[in-house]
Structure formats: structure tokens, C-alpha cells
Length: 385
Image 1 (cartoon, rainbow, N blue to C red):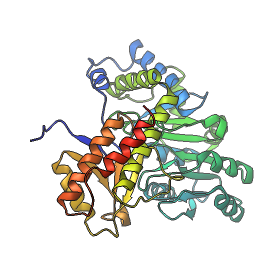
Image 2: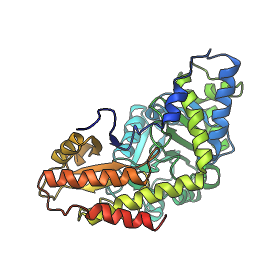
Image 3: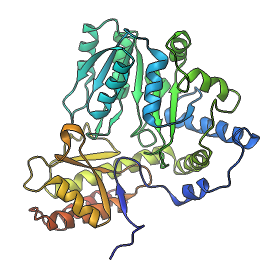
Image 4: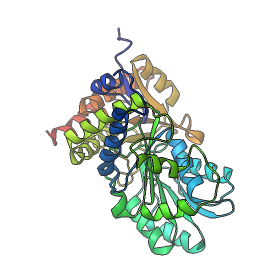
């Protein structure tokens, strides 16, 4: 009944890849130290600037996003130094694990999962820990669908401490506004497989002038993740180690697509996708995990822990309809499911996903009425047509 290669991948990464990007990545290989490769690296770095919101030169690592997060730790901190981590979900926890592995003393600011961190809470916490060297925070907490108020959190950090502001933006940069320089973000990390519409394998790091001073003085040993090497080689329009050239071909095309659509329109599209998804879920009478104020434009979490149907049974039913949604992580496993709506995603992808969700819910005997979720999302869409 269904085509094997025609499906809805509605997880918060990896995300679907536009056909023009697939074609770009299929180009013949070139020499990684050639003039063509140098021009490609320089172009991509320059065009990343407005997306991160910086005048500094973004670094491009052939790595996962997690490797870039680890790079932020090993380049700025030494064993026994203190750091604050705002933990709003699984990826805040990941920062904690990385820091503890490098013997950094971690002060955890634990926020209930599904809730954003408020600036006032961070301010009070910083007053309790006056010697921290860095504050780590997650822009979009992928595991819960929360978007933290990074601009305000960065401002509080700089007002009430001398700490660096280090941000995991992997699951939202390219889909939400980012003004790294203006907001006072010192290191900002994102990856290729989310809103950048590429396969996994590239990470991008924005570094402030203030952060570079700390990095230059830091004595912690590092090799592949030494950001100084990436900066030095980028100044020569190259990379310190072999770059993932096919992904760079794709990145060039992604940056062209984002520029063609216009970043403001990209951000508005993601807001629309969020609002359609949330309206559709509410139309079906399902509980959302986050408030409208805290909700991310890139992923929506639906709370199924108190439902009279099973979350994993629902996901299995959706897979049979060629629709893949994400489950919960850690203690949320089996309690929530998540719908990704970032990157190569438009309103009709959301309508299709909601339609399939209604069918799957009916198949597992959930008490919903067909059409109510789709209609609610359609009504939101009509306000923007």
C-alpha cells in the first residue's frame, strides 16, 4: 500500500534532506587541499555568520554535535574549575557528563523537565556560586521540546558573574533567531542534521573574542578538538584535518536555500509549524508537555503517561503508516512522543502527520474523533495564507 522510500520522518533529527541538497552531495570528489576546497570552506564559514548572528568566523568541524560540545569544555576549562549547567532535560545532562569526565566541578541548576529556565532562577543560583568560570545552557532542549530564553539567560550571566556563556543550539539554530554577538553568547554550537537539513557529520562553533582569550590561556591538553587549530587553519581557508567534503557541498546548497527563503521567513515558517502542530494535538484532546510560552518551534512533545493507550504502541502503529515520530528519553521513555518539525518541513507535512496520527490513534482504540486535529491545524494555516 505504501512506497518504501516515501515516508514522513518527523523526529527532531536527523531530518529530511531537500533533493537539491542530495544532488549537491553527489558531486564528484575534489582534493581536500585544493583551491576549490579552500573556496568552499571559506564560503560556508562566511555564510554561517548571519545564521549564528556573529561577525566572528564560525568554525566547521567534521564531527557530531556532541564532539563540538566537548570541544567547548576542553578548550575553556581545567580540572577543578567550577561551572554551572542549566539542566532542563537530557541534553543538559549531557553537558554535566562531559564536564564531570574532565573533572570540572559542576553546579547543577535542575529545572523541571518540560519547563524553561527563568532568568530570575539563574540569577539567584549564580549568587550562590560566585566562582564559576562558565555557564552551560541548552537553547532547545530536544528531549522535552522546551526553548530556553537564551538572550535573557546570557544577560543575567554577564550581569552577575564573569563566566562564559556556552550554548548548545544543535536542535534549533537555523530555525530560530540567534544573535550571538548582541546577546553575549561566548560559544555557540550547532550541527548539520537538524535545521540545517543535512546528514549528521558536521558541527559549527561560533566563538566570541572574549572566549578566544580564555581558550588561548587554557592549558588543558587537546588534539582533534583544539579550537585554536581550526581557527588557525580557517584563516588559511582550510581545515586542520580532512574535511567531510560531500557534506560541505551539501552545506553550500543549504546556505543558498536559507538565503533564498530569507531568515525571517524561515523563522516565521517554523513558528507556523509549531502552532499548527500544537493546535492539532490540542484538537485531539492530547496533553502537551510544554506551555505555549516555553514551546520550541522545532519539536513538540506530547504527554502520554496518563493516557489509556500506550505511547510505544502508537509509535509502532505510525511506523506501519510510514510515519516516524520520536519517543521519550531516559525516564520519559514510554511516557511521551515527540514530533519534529524543523528544516525541510512545510505545513502540508504537518497536516499529513496529524492525519496519520489520527488514524494510528483510532487503530489502538484511543478515544479521539477523526478530523479534529487536522481541522484545528488547518484553521491555524488558513490564518497565514
